[in-house]
Amino acid sequence: MKKECMQFQSMVEPFLEGKLPGSSRQSFIEHVRKCKVCHEELEIYHVIYSVLDELNNEKDKETTNYMQTLEKKLGTASKSDSKLFGVSAAYGFAAAGHAAITAGVLLLIL
Image (cartoon, rainbow, N blue to C red; front, side):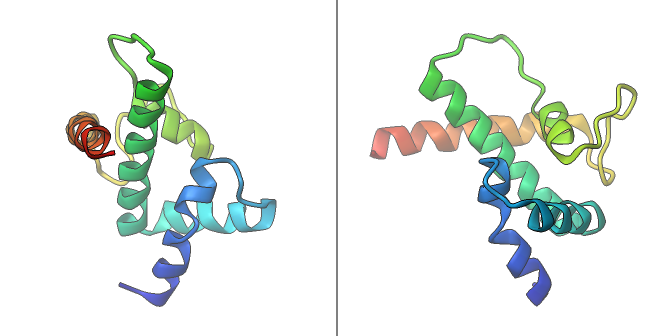
């Protein structure tokens, strides 16, 4: 992993929590748009955060478009765009399922 990527991966959680300052936030977004590895890492964290948030808030939603909410956070939302960096929506659903299982296991452990 590139040194630059390691720096940006430490910004994933603050970004998702809305705690990343403006200049750092912009640098983070620019890097994630260019780096497929960091973008995929961000997608995974975003799905996990979303699932945990739903579990914590006991929301009863039939479907949640995790990829669309991530696109909005990155400022790249597009009605017709179903792929980011070549990653299909199916990947998002698979990641969501994996995140839900992981969250369930974490809740059992904690």
